[in-house]
Image 1 (cartoon, rainbow, N blue to C red):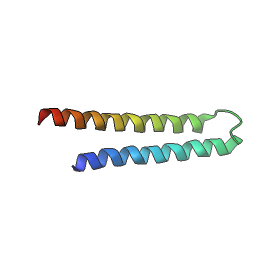
Image 2: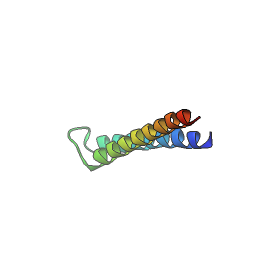
Image 3: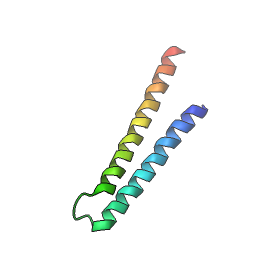
Length: 66
């Protein structure tokens, strides 16, 4: 149970951090074009989705083992 809480909490936290970085990047040039912080924030959000997917896959494999 603790690993599920950690996995989904980490995914939530990474999503929030990634969105904050992206919003900071947008505020730098008023969204006129892409810049490095927007790319970094997008990468963090993609990493959050990967963590969430890995957590869901782990849940599925645990239910098949039982």
